[in-house]
Length: 358
Image (cartoon, rainbow, N blue to C red):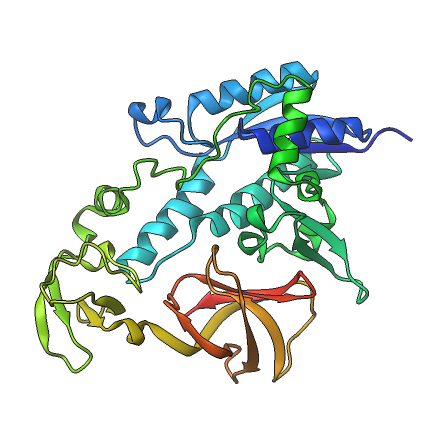
């Protein structure tokens, strides 16, 4: 029986490069693939946006050569535009704060890459994510936290299906970031000290509002009113796409003390302003629920629950609503529960499931 074949998504960074090396060392037949996802204009070529620039392709190709593995560039620009960029823009236009990495993982790095990988005879796809895949006692696959909490990337993977998990490898999850860099240095990879990508790859200058304005054109929300919860008008805002829940900076309101965005109302084009304590709440509602490590949830089940990527997690109870939504009740109030972000439930360090905050 021949070697198992794995397609490794290579971004040109150190994590996916070492993942490819580790899998080759483990005896897999490894194929390196870089996904061409986004090119807004020619200037984007040299920005260094990790998965979008020509330099990323060059770095990945060089690593593949150094490892002695075949390398291909696959174009997923159409699905990325539709499923990630258009979604990102639409969510902001509707007053929500999306997580494009979750959409990219779901529709591009797994749906599209896995399908293409299977077409060329691969048994698995692999990435450089800091996460692990385990099979639980109930027979279900689940994403489990990585060796290092500091780089844990499980939150953005909650939507993977059982079929996808059965055909996915994540070797970096068994190592710390420092260990990954050490391996890269030891085997002489030139990307050993390459900085991590910190931004949304298609907005490397961090100017979300400017990007949304370019993409939305006439659909870009206009100026509206900052209001208190009781409707009192406090001033003018620049358009709801400029704001997110919990925001304090950039409001340009002379209130004499710090104030915060507590709600965004796209129907009336209003941004609600409140005090620090108004940003906290104990409950949220979620829809688009996806189950991973558990087959279903029952009223009163308790999970460590994350409401954003950098959230440490807090204990909460879940309750099923008649329309398929979940009501999540935290033990303690949580800051800046933000519509559009994911809520992800953990049980024994594994993802039980997740949904989208309403």
